[in-house]
Picture 1 (cartoon, helix red, strand yellow):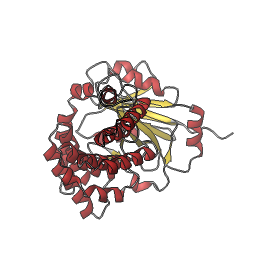
Picture 2: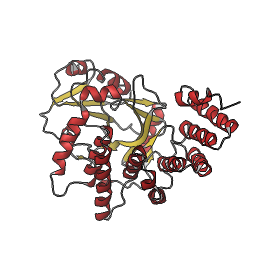
Picture 3: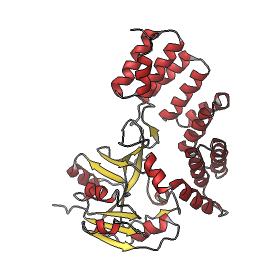
Picture 4: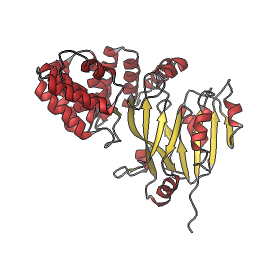
Length: 372
């Protein structure tokens, strides 16, 4: 019988007493080795580590997440490396199948769908962003992290990404961008400081402008965010690279938030041409049509969003609802605009069937002019 390939968990932590035990419990029966790099905890993080079979290393923080992660990679021994953060949990439907995939795949990297929750606790799967992340990779293949912040694996240097392996029966639940967590850790101030430092380099990545734009967006500084995401797009083009879909998602999100529907049209069509299966871009197109009172056109777009769905293209960062309950809700609003309360009510019922606690749809259902 072929020997099962081993898996090492590699993590970096600092003051994660609130999350660490839950995270480690989610992986303890899956991995063969746990390597944790502590970058300066002053709470009970290290004490929690002693309750698990952890190889714990101290690391002097130098403002580089990539350096800290790469230090951890230098300490692992497994055939495969899994990396997650303390504010995440790993859920696997079938552990035997999980190991079989790693045993049989020809790929050097495996992606795991990640559910990034937002809003208030408790986590709600209808309030999340979905994305498949490169979380499992073979050891001894030259993989390393790059980027002092928003660090990522040097995938394009090593791995063939034409046919990525996506472990659809596994999920990573990420809680780090829920409202209270962001406030507690003051992530935005830290992130902006590190990103501005990265931008001082003459050859800095166009991704840096995007990440700064994202921070400004979260702080509701929309004009600054818009200028920077446009700069990021421009710099990708100057490097003769296709700007990633994420940039267009943020750009049109900002324009819609600012009510600049004329500014968003018809540019959104070009973005959709580049990324025709990205449901979020189609969703924004529908909103633009709604704002222009082109209700029939909007309804057609929202039906297309429902057809595309949210989990069929996990390589795009997709907001839950855009391909399901939210599109049904906006179809209802469009039918109200067309003075068709019967079809509006049917659409709201469809929305609530998918998300029974969706307050906006409940409110529209209670309107006296949305008759049954």
